[in-house]
Image (cartoon, rainbow, N blue to C red):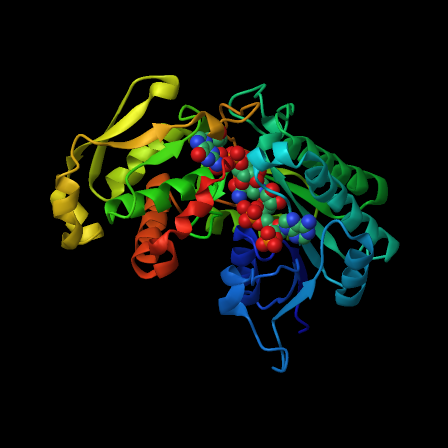
Length: 384
Ligand code: NAP
Ligand code: GDD
């Protein structure tokens, strides 16, 4: 039986890495689009790497960029994929306010370039396309919870660009009969999450605070609410969407929403640190209020307990206006009934087990990574 061929754009990102591993395990040959960078940017997929001289390679990387239509057309033509997962994007909402034109080029026109390449190459009836759409489309939410029929109201250059990506996917499906589908994925996180998204920023900072490497972390809007799942669960949905006889659009979400404040509280709590929030707005802070010593020793180690005890009453979290966005998405909570009934999709992780996974990973990372111990953390001084 011949192996299925998939092309993943954004293979070096969080979702691309998990999806590549998942598809290879299913027997696919996976081609990945990788941007040229002056430093290696393949850390998330290095464990899947195969030397080009090996026979029967299952992972093959190609230099490319969503802003380069000739390159996309050539790669799609050469690889002749049965499935394309378009995961590449400038994916940071706050950064999209700083780089709106580039974001539109990559996140909006990039989608068009892929669809048009498939059409021009006459692969319309062979190649199925997954477009990485987003709950950010709901922005200023018009309905709670959000489902496939909820009207969109994007609130950032990122979300407006993704709105084009969503509709051009629907349009090519209707106009040319392409098997092109949108996954409207709510926030999903993991130990591979980019360091400047809120969950990873928090778990990294808490790991450093617990190990005595950092005093305090500064955050933006603590009252925003997100529906957070685990990326490992969400990439299963991407694959299932392309296995359906008919293309369609699906919300993928847990149906539970949590404030940033509670995410921080739960993440400290996961390693036995109790915190108490006080004050409002820019004046809001969280202080170290208690330590569950048995839990802390089990999760972090007894070497760090004495130093932490001495910090009871000190501020661990503050607010910095620079992390606020010009327009905010206050509340996201998804209704994924359609995916659950048609795809049989269910998340396996809870928010608690997601946090456990991320905290465990970041504690291990901070203990062993001398670059981070020396101050590599300063990369977070950008206000993302
Ligand atoms: P991510 O970790 O930021 O990964 C983005 C990927 O896109 C990286 O591989 C990046 O390459 C690549 N990329 C960026 N600009 C590109 C360009 N111009 N040409 C080619 N590649 C480019 O994002 P993620 O969390 O895995 O998300 C995957 C996709 O799902 C994105 O489209 C995102 O917008 C969307 N999404 C994410 C979530 C979420 O909660 N994670 C929810 C809904 C939708 P480098 O490694 O070189 O930077
Ligand atoms: N990044 C960040 N940093 N966000 C903060 C901070 C902070 O210090 N403090 C508070 N927040 C709030 C943001 O204002 C936002 O309301 C929320 O935390 C989540 O921010 P992010 O983790 O950056 O994610 P996002 O929801 O804006 O976007 C992510 O999810 C989308 C799906 O809804 C990205 O992965 C997008 O690519 C994705 O489409």
